View 1 (cartoon, rainbow, N blue to C red):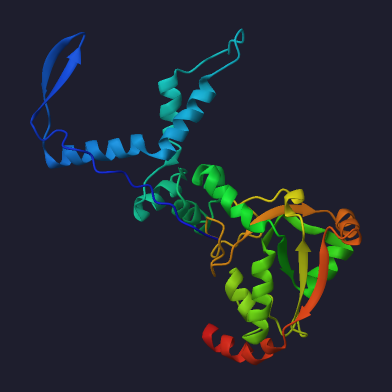
View 2 (tube, rainbow, N blue to C red; view 1 turned 180 degrees about the horizontal axis):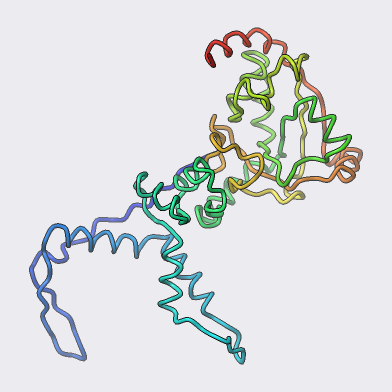
Amino acid sequence: MNTYADNKQAQKSQSVADGVTQKERGGESSFQFADNRPEAVAQLKMQEMADDSPQTTQLKAFQNMANARPSGIQPIQMVSGKENWDKLKSKISITSDPIKMAADIAAGKTPLNADGASMARRMDKKEQIASPELLFTPEEIKNHLGKFADGAHAFITPEKNGKIKGEWGWGLDKNFVAPLSEADALVSKAQGEKGIFTLEEALGIPHLKSWSWASEVNNPENAMWRYIIPKPENYTLSMASGRESGAYKDEWIAGGKSLGGATEAVIDKIPREKLLLDVAEGKVITEEVKFPTTQQYFDEFRAQDA
C-alpha cells in the first residue's frame, strides 16, 4: 500500500580518467597514480553514490546521536564511532537491485527504500520493514496525512460490526482508513458497478477468501458498515508501516496507497467501551450501506479464481 521513492545521484564529473590525482597536504602538492580499470572506476562511483545517498546521510546522523552522551556520564564500555557505524551498516541495505535486495532481506538486513519495504512484507519479514520516517521525508508524510483533513473512513462487514460493538472493540493494533472524500466517491462508484467487489479491488482486499467482504455465506445482504471519523488526528493518524495486523502479506505496499491505488493511513485501535462512547458523542459515526449489484458478479469472480 504504495508510493515508491528512487534515490538517483547526479553524474559525477570526470574524476580518475586523467591517470593521476593531486592532493594538498600541509601546503605541499603530491601526486598519486589512480586505478583506471573499468571495474575499479565503477566500484568507486557506487561507493560515492552510497555515501552520498539521503538514507546514508540520515543513518550517519542517527549514528552521531547514538554516540553522543550527556556530559559527566561515562558508559561502562564505549565502542568507537567507526565500529558503531560499521555495525549499523551491516544491518541495513541501500541497494535498488531487486535480487540483491531480496538476498539482503533474507540475510536479516533492513532495506531503506519503499520497494524494499514492500518486498520485506511479501517475504513475511515484518521486523525488517523500515519505518515511514526512514522511507519518506517529513514533507511527504505531512502532505499525505493532509489528505485526511476532512475526515477518515473505514468499511466494516456486518459480521465484524456486530463483534466490534458487542465484544472486540475496533482493531487489534491499528485500523486502516481512507480519506472521507475518497470513500464517498468510492461508495457511489461501487453502487453503480460491481458492488462490494469494486470496494475490494480499490482497497486491496482479496476476492472470495474466507476474510473477503463479498461473501454469499457471511454477507448475504451485500451490505457494509461505514465508520466515519471526523477528526482522525485525535486517534493518532499516521502512515501505515506494513507491520499492522491488517497489512496483508501479498497486498500491502509502502507509501500510503493500497494495491488498488486508494489512499490509506492508519489510526489507533479503539477499545469497545471507548468506541461506544465515541459513537454516542458523534466522534465516530457508523451507518450501514447496501450494494445490491454485488450479487451479479459472484459467478464472474469464481470463474476468474478457478
